[in-house]
Image (tube, each protein chain N blue to C red):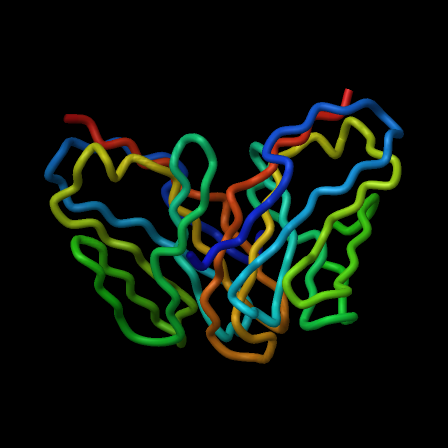
Length: 107
Length: 115
């Protein structure tokens, strides 16, 4: 069993829809990261969470430490949000990644 | 501009020919790390370094070497590359090496093909 599980693996939605991507992990962590990877490969850090909730523009990330679960939400989705979203957890000195969620937003 | 740089960005090489991928950060970060990304396997950690002269294995260290002689540089060395090391490689850095939440900064990636 992977230490970090993301769902769904693929998600296609229409522009304007509310998007939720989920991440569950099985180890005690010091932080959880949400990353974005556009076609072409570069990785951008969206959020770093150790508790609660964070918001940047249309993106919201939440974490429940007791349930070992985090969600990434996108409100009013747009085609430019199409990318792979990756959850990563830090424990000890290591970073362990989920498999990623490929999001496609159609106009 | 604060950044992590990697060179080369693309490399095609042959089995057994030693190569080095350089990684440099200009943010005075303590922690640096190398990852490889493969279809169906996602990102996996190869090696990490908590500070100068301090390195440790990640989840997939076989076939790789690293060194951390200066704080800003963390090269990845493939002494005898093999086709199963064909992958997309990312270097990343983080301000602190200790426990706790620390932001991660990724380089642009190096696409390596070993024939």
